[in-house]
Image (cartoon, rainbow, N blue to C red; front, side, top):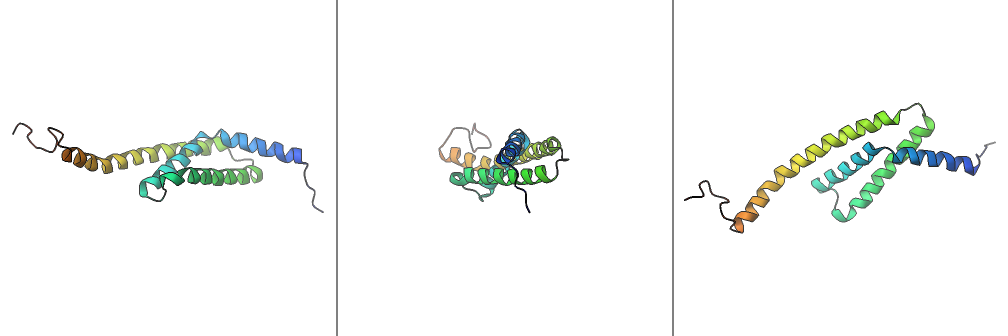
Length: 125
């Protein structure tokens, strides 16, 4: 016969998990960077980015809850630190890719707009 825990205990454990998950800023940063990378490569559209972020946060919470309930020996602060480091590196990569891919279109736009001294090797000629 299965013993069902009282609802107060279930709610207390769930609130504890939610509080612990909300304190993991590295995971939130990693989710944000993953959504931005998805937008950069064209997988995610601007109008659906919030749904992707919510879905990724839900997946992260479910993984956190499963490991938190079944393996309470895991130190989540260390894993959150790793997630923050991955997010920081990914953010630099995203910034570099954005810089590399937006320079030429801006140059072309300003050259076509006839901005003085742009698009010439010697502007005095």
